[in-house]
Image (tube, rainbow, N blue to C red; front, side, top):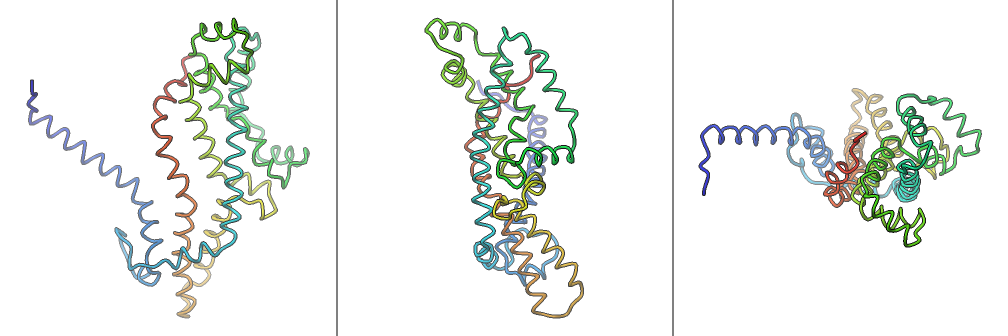
Length: 297
């Protein structure tokens, strides 16, 4: 039987499509502006006013300048190291912590859980954290970026809740076959909750990719800087140069600044494109994974 839609339903759906389309455009436009700006001719872009809905002219000078900057490649290498090593170690530590706290026969689990949740609301602060990292010899070390943030409390709680939903009968059967806790964790619990693992791994990977503040605090060696810290430096330098020049009439200087604007857009694209490419492959796990780990207690 074919349902004939009423006039009110058609109007409601039309309004929803228009409203959601506007919301999507508002969210996407800043990103599209940067992409269009990165491919624009610097001089034409400088003369353009108003909304930018397509590239003004066409030029790859910005990307050529970005890829000739060795700092970009150094930053890429360091960021990949922090993302890969950081995500793996954080996933292992979070999984082990969540598994221990999800054991109902662990007497201290409620007290320790409350102590961990306490850290979500109260922390020592930036200066004590810096002094602690320096006192244990991690300052200016790559481990200073990974170890202080090994476990995110919120991710630990999500994973612990997901583990609680694994049927006890599965674990009891594995124990009867002689499995120990590590075997149960990686061969029983992990396959059942792999959607939650995928979501938490994506959270950690995106966090590591975008992180720059800890690197600014703990790293003085530029060879260890992540990409985002170099990008921050490029953005600040361009802004400072633009403010300093002001109304200078030197055409060569002005042209350089126009090109630096394009370089700034290109740097943003180069820094964000890899994580945007990875996101669609993990997106399908989001709803299932987060729902499995949603708080029930």
